[in-house]
Structures are given as structure tokens and as C-alpha cells.
Amino acid sequence: MTLNIDLNCDMGESFGAWKMGNDEAILPFVSSANIACGFHGGDPATMRKTVAAAIKNGVSLGAHPGLPDLQGFGRRNMAITDQEAYDMMVVQIGALAAVATSQGTRLRHVKAHGQLYNMSVKDEGLARALAQATYDVNPALVFYGLAGSKMLDIAESLGLKVASEVFGDRTYSPDGTLSPRNKPGAMIEDVNVSIKQVLQMVQQGTLVANDGSTIRVRADTLCIHGDQPGAPAFAQAIRDALIANGIEVGV
Image (cartoon, rainbow, N blue to C red; front, top):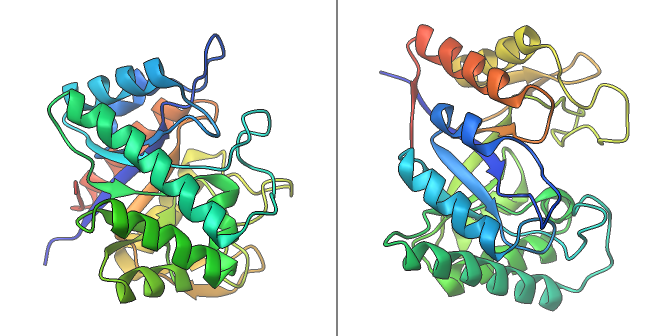
């Protein structure tokens, strides 16, 4: 059986005169784009341009809603209620869906950003709010969530199709969550180390946590972060390694 994995990247996170990442250079190497919706990053023009660039490259579109925290880039904890999380998701998914419609296409998936994602991994109420909002906007949307987390089970219980997400440029804690970004070694900066982890996750369904223990994971979609230095070269090297090992890249 031929292995297949979706390669996704967070994009469209520039805002006004502030530029983040190099989306145009990364798009040729990924199969899905998670596009910021204006809360943690992005703005209307950036959303429009990123959607257009993704269409040009034949890349699938996804909404990437986050916390309303431009200054902290959506990576800081915020005390929000489940209802507030639901409302944030509906507004952001709806905004990007409208941008996609204006260019003759539609969204395929939804993936929460940053701390909203991390909080929902550990908070079942938030996870349900995110999944319910996705379902209520469009039940055909695929819900991306952390491999092995309750958020995937909750989304499936609501009737959503889910994609179990793993990370090629992040290390993991023994409980299967991502290592906190404020801790040393949270990001994998050596592409060869990243490729080793990626191939192990896709081919064997396991990864090695930061304490040396082994974690079982299901890899449906693989995230590469577009805001790290050298992201385009990172994305290309990982895609090349996947293909060289007989693993197809696509949704």
C-alpha cells in the first residue's frame, strides 16, 4: 500500500507593513495552506493575496483561526469562554470562506492556530467549541487536530471528518503534546533531524519524545511552520525526502 501524507503550512500571517514568512517560496512544496484570518495575523489584503497564490500553486485552502492577539501572534494564553471560542471560530472561518468564494473556490479544512490550538488539546470544552463552530459553518470541512488528542475524538463525534496532525519541525513532550515554545529545543532547526522524525512518524507511526520515550501517532497531515528561518528550504527538503521514500504528498 502506498503511503500518502498531506503537507500543510501556516501562511498569510503578515499584517499591514509587517511581513511574516515567505509564502510564495513555500507554496510549491506543500499541499495545504492554513491561512490566517486576521485575529493573530493576516489582514483582508493578505488573505486575498494568499488565497490567490495558493490557487495558482494548486494548494488546498484552510482557515487558520487564532486568538485575538496580534501583538503576541496568538501564542499567549488568554482566558476565554467556550462561547467566545465558538464565536471567534465562526467569524474567522466565515471571513476566509468568503475570500475563497470571491475567487471561485472553497475551503477544505480548518486548523486552529497557536495557543488556541494548544489550549483546546487540553480543554475538552474548548475543543468542542472549535469543532462545533467548524461544523456549523460547513459540516464538510476537515478538522485538523493534534495526533492522539481528544480534540479529534470530539470533532468526529460531531460528524466532522478529521485529519490527525503531526509536526516536522517541533519536538514533543512525553504526553504527546508539543514542547512549549519558550523551552529550549522546542523547534527542530536541523533539517536532517526533522526528516528523520518525519519518516519515523509516517512510516512507523511513532516518534521519540524529548525524554527519549516512544509515542504512537497517526500521521494524516504534516505541519511545517512558515515563520521559521529557512522555511522554504526546510519544506523542500522534507518533501523531497518523502517522495524519495515512496511517500506521496497530497490531500
